Image (cartoon, rainbow, N blue to C red; front, side):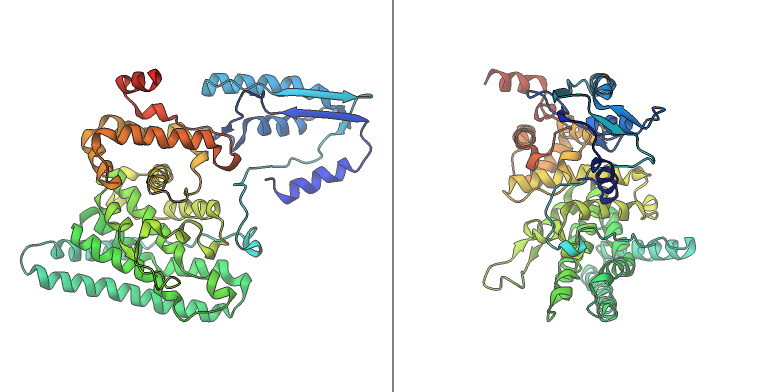
Length: 445
């Protein structure tokens, strides 16, 4: 979908008589797929179309048919040389005479967004600020060192029971403080819908120590400690208890849980240890709205995919999470391999979550169709060739290691075939997960 400003500019000149007849451009032939270009952050055809429309032609108007050839050549060449893909735009005309368009006076930028009906239209176009989550160097070092010391002591066999209680009390205090901060933020909101983005930002800022603790446990902690931490993560849902009204519904702090899932996930992938993520996703949640039903694993709690606080738009949630992770500058102290690549690892975690969701017959998480193969290829390679890592993934999926590659191939193939609600596919193929012998077996079938 294009931005409103862009549409306004287009309507301005289309209200003028520009010719008679009809003309139809398509991004590709009927038997081809039109792809998105991650470098241009737009559809390949859309990018070159608007580039050509906005070129200075030295006159006030130009014949529309004149721009088809350069657009078609650029799309075809880029698709072939960059992506080894066949994409050939088409042109269908029924003209009584030339159709002219006026030259754009100012450059406009049109970028795609996930075509998805948000649950709360009031927030669909609202920008959610990314909070300043950086800490002063000395403060950051102090907090991280104290948490590392706490976690390492908790894993020491001497006085293990006592240390576990100390660790659990510390987790409890952090969540209690977060709850108190949220109460204050909620009260300051005053039921004002326009204040929700700022409320979300304040809550994220107040959660920074809880984020750091999760990262420290994922890096240095035991499975028992991750279990304790995960239970306190799902306790965040209880912040909505005894709340009512429209604003209360939207202001639930589910975004914090989504951010923790990705935070734990990117560290797990960078360290080749998926166990902490497995413990977190399998932690049981008691749904306050479904009191007669048994608890379900956190992965099954679909609301965190959409997050009411951001308007119920899954794509917006994913983009917001990606920006939040970029702000965690302290992560490099705990997981040096992440470097400045948190966004790449986040996309790889997203692929893993989508495959797992598909395996459990749940809703897909957002952003899957936007994956560039270059970004997820390192994860594909590890699943394909790293036996120990593949065993971990198999345990996460509760499947045999010998079948996990074929499972991923199947799910990616289904996603590609379904195009995820109409999105054009440009990503990995299912067969990319298979070794040569497995490919031959699939091809014979």
